[in-house]
Length: 122
Image 1 (cartoon, rainbow, N blue to C red):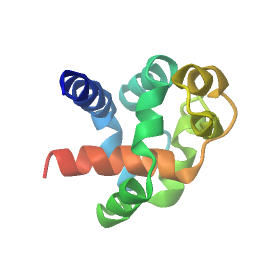
Image 2: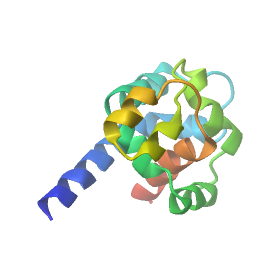
Image 3: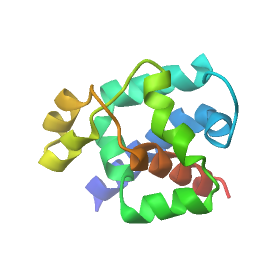
């Protein structure tokens, strides 16, 4: 039970770091601002398990319901200069996920991130 609370705190911290990306994910034009990219890069480097936990069927559906632009979300890490390989999450070990996040990203990653952030503040 204590471990669950710690996990929720980490998830909340991750989501809070990504709040500056919401305007961009909801249809802003041009390049994402540094205020979005810098926290996203930090999450990718320091909390890859956060992104792993956010990708789920439930998270993807919530993102769609939040009106997140799927194409923008899919390209965000690369536009920020930090593409990730989300396939590392399938290995099950957070170290494996962290070490392999560096090549490509699948769409659900940021959709889930954005949806969880959106619904936290609704």
